[in-house]
Length: 194
Image 1 (cartoon, rainbow, N blue to C red):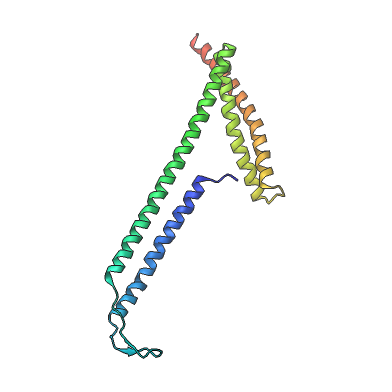
Image 2: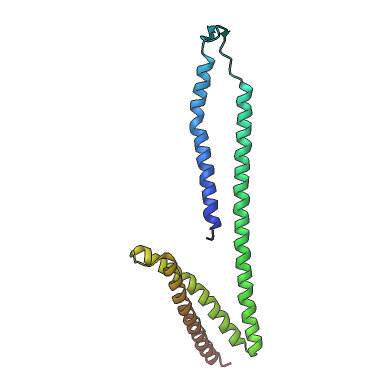
């Protein structure tokens, strides 16, 4: 199963917000408990089992400051890790987009050089772009239709069938766009007497 880096980052942000909320919510109760123990009257009492006298110890203020420093460092590390993870995920997605774009462009150039025609290179570029866009749009649309109308297809089936339909529609759309651009270019040529 492929995990979505954005969803993982969102879970991390939610965890950080819940941690901060818990710390902020519990802070008034801990202050009240400390003030209560500070105003408590110390008295000697006797332990029932051993008969020894003991006193209630005073709270250590330095320990509370130490805990606050540890909590601050921990929260800072969590926020830094979340920022670093989000940056790495964004960089990874941009790198994938760059490689796919370079592959599409180089394939179109190679087809154009092989057929010795700028038109065939441009046509292959349009068909590839439209087919990829059609696959994503078709799979998303099929998934939404499956969920909205509560069809009996599984999620995998609806996504694959939507991608197949989107691929076919994208190829047809790419060819249609190329033909429309060819007709428009011929019309502009006639109009400009080239």
